[in-house]
Structures are given as structure tokens and as C-alpha cells.
Amino acid sequence: MSFEELINNNTLTDIFLSSGIGALIALGIATIILILVALYVYFAIAWMTIAQKLKYKKTWLAWIPIANWAMILQLGGFHWEWM
Image (cartoon, rainbow, N blue to C red; front, side, top):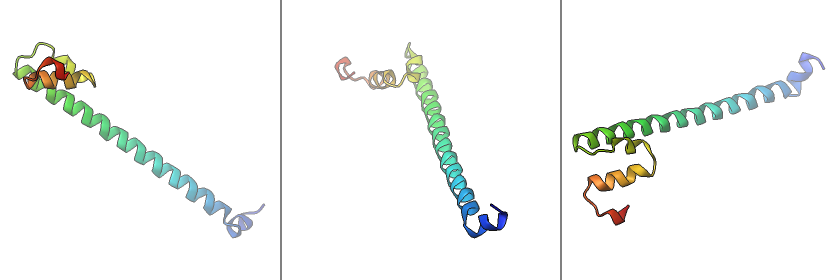
């Protein structure tokens, strides 16, 4: 198949278009994951700092996804059953 036949059949443009769309989707997913990781780190550092200022002994709980909810409730003075 010659180059002219590829252009006339739109096969080459379809290949470039489909690979470009796939690259944009992959870039979008990677960007979303990067933003989510950055937000997780930011909130973990923020809650750890708050816990340190309130003299909470187990500040490392801010980094554990479910345990940080328990820590936040304890910092707020809620009863242990809420955890």
C-alpha cells in the first residue's frame, strides 16, 4: 500500500487521531491521580500538624486512611463509640 492510498483511505489519519485521543486520556488520568495524591499528602500533613498542636500522642494516625477519621473525632472530643 502506498502513501497516497493510506491518505486517501484515511487510515493514517485514523491512526494518528486514535493514538492522540488515547494519549490525552492517559495524560488526564495521570493528572487526576497526581492531584489526588497531592491532596492526600496535604491533608495528612495538615491534620498531623493540628494533632501536634493539640498535643495528641499518635499524630502518625493522620496518614492512615480510616484511622485518621478516628483521630479527628478524638480531637473533636467525641465519645469513643463514634469511632
